[in-house]
Image 1 (tube, rainbow, N blue to C red):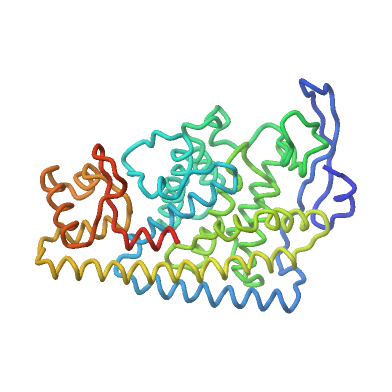
Image 2: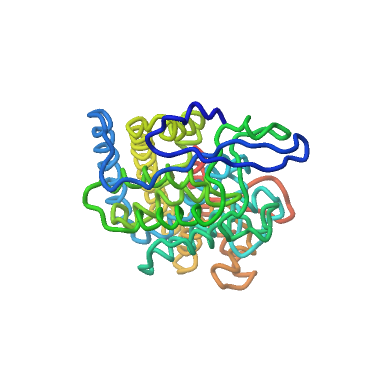
Length: 393
């Protein structure tokens, strides 16, 4: 990390750190410790305020769309799986979206990457339940989310579910020196833990001086800069965006998928965050963040509307085929929540016999609602092609 780039930062200070590297021996350098977040809005330009207004309008439209859904939690699942796949890809763990869409929540995926991606789904569901129960964000919640994220991965060590107790560096290639890192977060210790708790206090305290969207953007910067855990910081930080907007009442249903937009602009995303630490460029970061949220909200709202339209169309096909059984309609709903599935999945989630599940799938294939996914004759999987087309476009 080039210390001269941070020497005059208005948003933090440099502190000395040191240690021993197996390859390079003893080393000494500096780490960046961010100041506490301010209690009022940073100085922002007119274009940034306009971007904030556009984002708030897009979020309001998304919320209005979600409120019209007869069962908003049902359509939360496919969008959540999309977010899981994209937010994990940003951190270097890639699994095809089709593989993620085909995971049964009651089963353990065989593929390590898919398993790690799907850990995000479990973590997000835990967080959503936490907020919907009326509980505030806490350090304990963050620790539990990190523990879920790294479960059954190489990061599932004794440090899992705990604030880090070792120094980490960001953007250093394997075998490089510490000072080659792009960024070095604060060193561990009592002061570091106090900073994390101060961050949580800032996020949860009522503040009428800062727009909730701006607060979410500022909090995202602070969380990523503190880098509280040995692994999972990026994914938790982006999940916090949705949690905050949900908790602040901006979104009644946490269906926003923010990561695809940031993933497509990965380099600028990291550069904008770094610029806040180097020069205090809140304006550039908040505008970039607001543009991303606006685009994400518009995309999510369109997708929810399209999924609802397809759901109604598929149920009309069921009725036209003369399939009056309630389980046929439930199978349509299940095909939205888990777009790729097996007969065993249907048996488990609809709580019917295997024979009945197999018959239902066959009836919906004849009605033009479902079709087989792939060519295999063993472990056959099925999908509602109209649903899958929306999710994969």
